[in-house]
Image 1 (cartoon, rainbow, N blue to C red):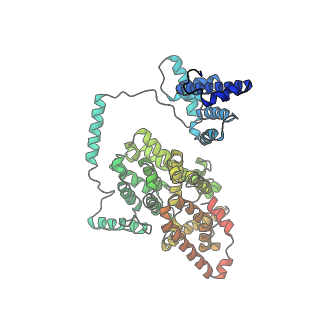
Image 2: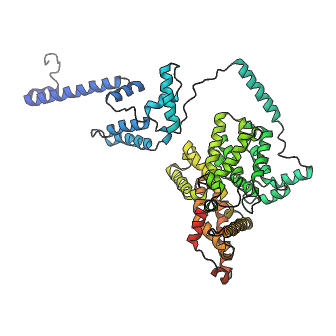
Image 3: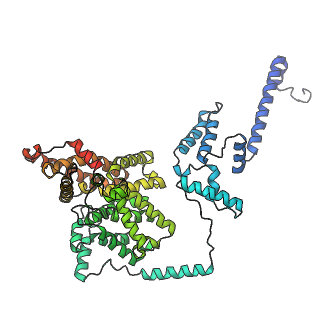
Length: 531
């Protein structure tokens, strides 16, 4: 080595030559280890990642996938085993623990055992496959919300395409003129159009529309808003059937002081305001918007002026039919959908594809049943939980969208205390008139008189103060967190109304107050269990 060096050996050669043999040996071992590690890393990076099927084979070989567990459960099992490895650093474990947390929050719909997933897909027509798929279909349809896929495919033919195009052209031609929901002379139409001009504002009053339409505010406002949201054209709704449906639904409402067609139209307007001014429509698709508008129109259809508690205590036919469970709300849905099923000329869902019609029906039933006040605090809890979990972005998830729709309709149904004070008073007086009628009937039948239903011991201002303080204000605070654009118009008006009721309470005669037999807790109990 030294002979080949012109200027003599390099400087480090003397160091190596004078080093201890043991140090030389250790240095060689270290160099070998470094070289081995480099080769291993080069080999690792040169290998391709396994495909999904190869990964499943590896996990199955290590018994980390079990056929009786769902995909999410199997994924959690594999990740938990990996997270137990003490050799992993914190930075490596962080994404593993995050993935496990996400999997724990997955929907119940995904908790289907792996062995049944074949039942969600079409299989070959062999007898063995048919037998296995029929069993899987039975398990899926009986024990899960998932419906198995249809195994009778429909072949697309040229004739079918031609018929579809012809139908679409005819429908488009028929939809060029919107017309109106009922015939009216020019003066009436001008009055109706004038009454509808302020429909986008919170202080709009449905009572003027009820007057100029001669008692037909619901079908008028429903027709107007469905066209305003362009749902009739985008979803190809049959206009003649829609007219029939609107007349049918409004005709189901009775002449109650409160639960009548004017109340339904008022709730419909409130929902429209949430969608437009509150920008809730940005979080929903067309089918969800249609479902909400239909649900608002029919949410109290057939209401007889008595609450669920009365029906349960009196053992009415409604209570017996629906087993004391959300008696009125179930009856509203059943009345409308039975009519639609028996009379195709009023079935507004016939224009939709079967899966679309099924989705609208599901969401309408879900939201109408949730207007049962016994579910109020459950609704509030779900509303807050979703909001706290991810803010506004979380509402785009399908499961959370249901929660949003439920609470939009429920909030619209409770909106009277947030209206301008003259309207709030008018609605409050009407609900009390209806309550007093129920109290009279309960006395006649020898039933216990429900709270706030006794004519001689009820103070309206006290009831409204308790209702706003314990029910409306906390609920609308969450609503305004979800839809911040509503906070100014709604919460400021609610605050003014609460101050006005307190002023009325303070100036009420003391003798009138002394006859008040219930405290705030009794009022709250009433609103939760009886309304």
